[in-house]
Image 1 (cartoon, helix red, strand yellow):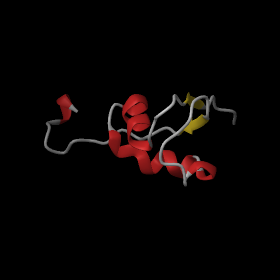
Image 2 (cartoon, one colour):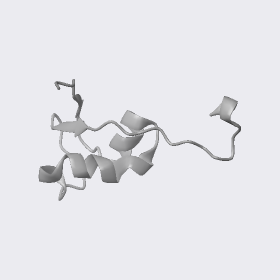
Image 3 (spheres, helix red, strand yellow):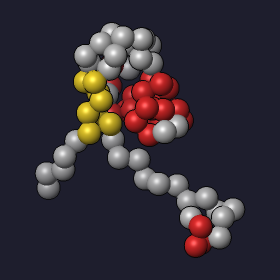
Length: 70
């Protein structure tokens, strides 16, 4: 099955948490980004024009909301 892969092209000064926030709207997905891009795992601050794979993140259900608001 071929699936289109989302790619993020870094800008100078990007960090894992800032990339997570730009791509997913929250910085808590840094770990998933690192797992999808193991060859860059030792980079803390990125230079420009590096291409990172952005995996699909399953949406979490908020159990404190009623089903019609989730």
